[in-house]
Length: 359
Image (cartoon, rainbow, N blue to C red; front, side):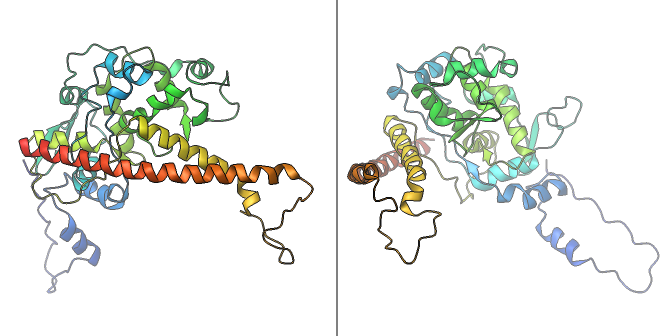
């Protein structure tokens, strides 16, 4: 039920003049909607924090492309066919209000709002069991996730190539050091389990999760619940928008007036993986060639901008045609891929519209 607004207190004996509220108070009373926010504190969290955060969308995995790979084995072992299916349409305001209304005691059994969140005038359940039921996994037996004590060097040996220990003095791994099939698994993890926009490096937490998933099952109920609570208290991008919108709809929240949808990302498939690898390799090549291309270097205005600074070094000049050829071929491939991406996006949109019509 909607929370009743607190009555205003009397100002005491009249002084003959009526006190007018400050501009700040008037503005807050005009904006605070107790149908959307459980408390004024939740509204302030929305106003000053969650309303300005980005949102990372879940991604569909085209499972037929990875049946015989690590990613396919992980999905089959955990029965995640529904979990990695096409995510439903998500709404920006629903997601941002949900995170703003998550209170600090949501995991405290003695608190009145234990494992529930205030949304649009009512409380909806939000717990590990809610997550499992949403994906049809409430009867799934899983291993207890205990990767925190895993030796970092053992993690590196199981997921990397070319290195046998965690880099000294570093908190991350270079994504390119991952085994090819682990890179594919990381695409799903970085969108659906431990969402992040920093995919070129791999944190210790993500590396341990990749290590764990190769041989064991994961309770995504507890994992996602803990992750959502963690995101609420940190200035990270908001995540799991399709799930959040989905449970709100299941519990009677009216979505018919929602307008702004969360931008959907491309599905994880063989073509997308190859495109991503080429993109990262091109960025790395550009960094290597930066000084040669004049990046960060103040050119001498007395010399030609096309002059070779080391004319006697013929090795670089001989390599130029090869780089130009690679750049030309890469441009042609990217153009063809962009066309194919647009076709896939149109097909996905049509499938989503058809699914919503059937509902």
